[in-house]
Length: 47
Image (cartoon, rainbow, N blue to C red):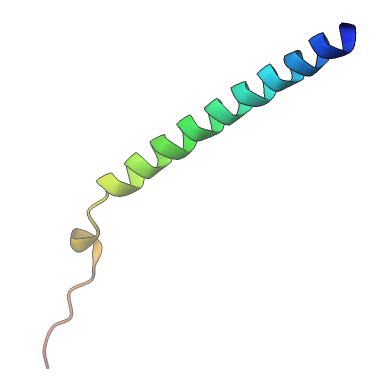
């Protein structure tokens, strides 16, 4: 029974780590999506 409890505890920690990682990735993706790259392009003047 102790081995089973250890197994479930480890699985719970693994899931918490995955949830944290997904949250970080989602937030990072949202920040990247919010960027407006059109305004950051340098203007090239015709000669």
